[in-house]
Each structure stands twice: as C-alpha cells, then as structure tokens.
Image 1 (cartoon, rainbow, N blue to C red):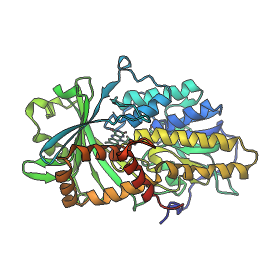
Image 2 (image 1 turned 180 degrees about the vertical axis):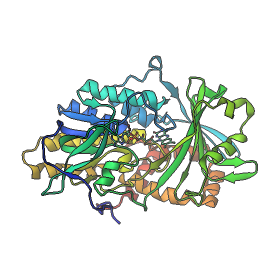
Image 3 (image 1 turned 135 degrees about the horizontal axis):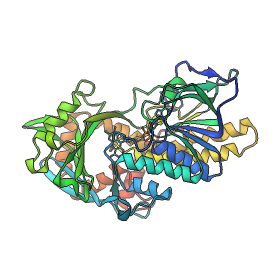
Image 4 (image 1 turned 90 degrees about the vertical axis):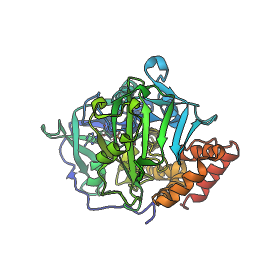
Length: 437
Ligand SMILES: Cc1cc2nc3c(=O)[nH]c(=O)nc-3n(C[C@H](O)[C@H](O)[C@H](O)COP(=O)(O)OP(=O)(O)OC[C@H]3O[C@@H](n4cnc5c(N)ncnc54)[C@H](O)[C@@H]3O)c2cc1C
C-alpha cells in the first residue's frame, strides 16, 4: 500500500441541507495541541475559525507530559511564554537506563532547536494552547461533541459537521469551506469519512500514572530501555518524568511489533516493574495520586491520506506520533502549522479547482517534513520489536556515549539541516529512507 492509497470505507454522513447553526471559513474538530495550533495559525492568517471541543478546559489527557526541545520550539512559535516563572519545569536532557548502565545525555546544541526540554501537565498545557488560539481570534466552543460529517450530496465532500452539546443535547450543524479532523487517536470524524487506521503502520499502547515522590525534581527526562521484574525481562519501555510539583509521571509502553502486544495487562506490568524500584523513590500504591490510565499512540502516518474529500487530518488523527520515541505533542503542533499555512493559501485562491490544487499539497508537505524520518522509524520499530535485537543494541550502544549521543539525535529528531557529521548522518538516513513521491 502506498501513501496515496486511502484506507477507506463507505463514508457515513448527513447530506448538507438546511441552514447550519454555525459557519466559518474553517471548522476544526478537537482542541488538543494539533487543533489549537491549527486554529491559532489560521486565525493569525485572518481566517474565521470555529474550534469545537467535546470536553471543557481544564481537562485531563493521558500523557507522559514531557516535551523535547522540538516541543519547546513549537510552543515558542505560538507565542507561549516558557519561562520557569510561568510554571514550566525545564530539563537538560535524557537519562537512559539499560543494560545495567545509566547514561545522562544532554539535548544537542543546535541552531534549529533550544537546548532544553520541558515538563507540564496536559491539564495546563492543552488549556493554555486552546486559550492562545482564542486570543488569536479562533471561536472555541467547549462541551460540544462532534457526531458526524455533513456531506455534499453531489460530490460526497465534507462541508460541515453535526454536533451535540455534552454529547446528548439537540443536534446542531457547523459548516466550513474546509474541515479539519484534530480529534485525536480514534478520530471518529475520519472513521465516519471512511478513513481507518492502517494496520501496516506502527501503533503503541502506553499507560501512565502519578506518584508522590522525592524524585519529582529531576533535570533529566528518564527513559528505561529494559524493564525488569526480578530477574525476568518484561516487554516494553518505561519513563519517569519529574513534574516538579511533588509528583512523578511514571509510565510504560509497548509497540505493536512486540510479541506481547495485544495480550498484556498493562496495569499489572507497570506495577511489576515499579516493584523493583528503590523504596525511597515512593512508587507505591499509597503514593499514587491518580488512576493508572492508558491510550494508544498512532505512529509514522498510520492513517492516510491526510487529505480526503475535503477533510484534513492533523496530529494523532493522522497518526503523526514519532515512531522512534513516542513523542506526539510537537508533531501535533507542527502538523497544525503546516496545515494552517496550506489552508490559508488554498482559501485565497479563486475557484474550487484552484483551492483543491493547493489543499492537495498538504500530504506532499507532510511527506517533505517527516516522510523519510518516519519511514526510517517504521524500520526501527520493526527491529526493536525483536527482543534479541533490542538487547544487542542496548548492550553495545550503552557503553559508548558518542554512539548514544547520535542515537539521541536520531530518536528525538533533533538535527540542524547543515549541522555536524552526526546531523548529516541522521538527515542522510532520513533522505535515503524517503519513499519516492
Ligand atoms: C500514555 C501516553 C503518554 C504520552 N506521552 C507523551 C509525551 O510525554 N510527550 C509527547 O510529546 N507525547 C506524548 N504522548 C502522545 C501525545 O499525547 C499525543 O500525540 C498528542 O496528544 C496528540 O495531540 P492531538 O491534538 O493530535 O490529539 P489529542 O491530544 O488527543 O486531542 C484531541 C482532542 O479532540 C477532542 N475530541 C475528540 N473527539 C471529539 C469530538 N467528537 N468532538 C469534539 N472534540 C473531540 C478531545 O477531547 C481532545 O481534546 C503520549 C501518549 C500516551 C497515550
């Protein structure tokens, strides 16, 4: 299957008759990082944007709450103040634990990205981004669940959405010249338009919770490459991110290339892993402050095409999580920006055919941004699904800091276009992996 072949089933939508309750140039469904970024950049370009969100802020989102320098850059681009006075907790790199070793790797010094990462609970972060979109002029409606697409009878193109306040109130319709699905991993709107997830693309499942812990202040994000239950190696990879507020965000994930994927009790796995941790870290039931919650991480473009019958996908809806490290916030915001710039140009063109031509450039722009890197990531995910290969890489990589510094650049997608030899190697590999077209 190529990037062009949609995983498409019959679209199930309402045909577009009657007056809509709301109208805008663009209707964006979902106010997570991708939807808020899309709405922000569209509003900045002078377009009238409706941003529809089923929950009300502040709301929880299951996440590790960690931002690499890539995420920091995306926040700065939206004019968010990321100073420590404003409640941000900074980190200077990644601590990697594996093969009996512990390595602290600082974020690389680059001109393209800042030299630090951040941690912030999603309850804060997502609200901040949504308010930023509102400040820029987007019309945010909270507590409104989008229930399906409205389709043009003649062309089958999406022209709007139906929605219900609180998911159960009276049905309303919202119309736009283009519609954006930024409704996250399960993207009901994409599914209703016939766009399913691709089962030939990577998918992760991860769980996380919070513990009161003396480790809450940590200036490194911590990543565990192998999880031990006594002397038994468990499947998956773990993280411990200090939140700076008395708690640590602790979680683990598995990839669908792992043999254990699909028949693992993640909650039990997390508890077994944490049982082996030093007692003084406090990762015990008495110190747990939140339930253990899990969700999927759709990776490496696992829903395609990102433009189909008038619907454009951003962030997790388009499966844009980095397959190397499970980072999704930065890609959600970046794809929102790429998408908004495409839409702004498209809607400035006279005539639908001309507009369509520009919108068709969105998948191309995404491929240019991430195509090669994600193709490489898909190979990586397949390889590390084999425990013997993963063990080999950890055993031989961990004793070599120079190798691990290269690995960090590769895993976090942090390079300069014309940087040093390691940057050029990562960029070259991504270019090589890019599938033609
Ligand atoms: C356990 C776990 C840990 C993770 N850790 C990290 C991490 O540390 N760092 C990182 O960068 N990424 C992490 N990720 C990935 C990251 O959470 C996602 O990639 C990111 O949230 C994607 O943003 P989004 O805006 O595309 O989707 P979402 O954040 O899912 O936002 C979608 C929005 O759409 C709304 N919505 C959904 N359906 C409807 C509807 N019908 N009508 C109206 N609104 C709707 C939702 O309420 C939500 O607000 C993690 C993911 C998981 C599961």
